[in-house]
Picture (tube, protein in one colour):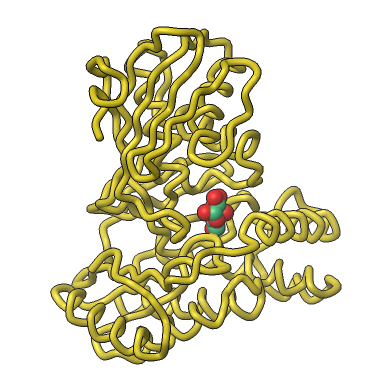
Length: 352
Ligand code: GLA
């Protein structure tokens, strides 16, 4: 189905945004910390035109769903909540958004931890920016997308996903200081490429577990007398906290240090070790892994040619990312996927 078939007219604009995979720096962004994502080839594209009536009309090609949204009265759920959220936050900023027809199509997998929602938000905001010639730079687009997610999807997320979808490309890593929004474009470690495998276990409890972790971090920072956990660099500092705050803080502090380590320049094997340590900390300190992710990461880590592997995204299910020898990605992904699925899982390869 295309725009013309659904809305019987041609769209005025189209815009796209990629998904992202975070290589290091997990659950650090809402602690004012450091992250290291890259964009993925999978993209979300929106086509937008003006609506002939007083409703917004949103169509998802993948879901084959058409939703009419009243500009002030409707509170849509599902994919429409993100699009509606973007429109609403633009209105909060002072822009007048006329009723629109919007068709979305996406190859970013949903629920795999690759930011399908941020890709939709950034694509929608880019499309509206070009339709209405809004004066928004790419950082502002990311910030508005984050607000749409927090206010209209109910996830108190940080800025990692939207900044990555708005500013990263597939050829580099984006180092981002989420407090200052200072950033650096870095090359991938020499001789390495990325493999991403979906565990096939969809994220459950993601938003409740996520919001809980965030609250725990805030309370840890408060008890340590700092604005955010980013302000602590010695992991020993966490020992003074009660559990589980101590473990949560230990993860955030060590994870920030791992990202900063990469900034100093590391080889692919060194980068891989940092990824392995990140997974261990996400599993044991932050407790956002699940058995399927641990199994998949173990299989990846013991496969020759793999420098390191970890869960990526919020956790509680979703995908794993591995750094592997350049040229070996396809073979490694096939081998590991076979082993994993022979254990009764239903994983699949997303990038190799
Ligand atoms: C989700 C959130 C991000 C970030 C990651 C974990 O993707 O949207 O803001 O917190 O989880 O690193």
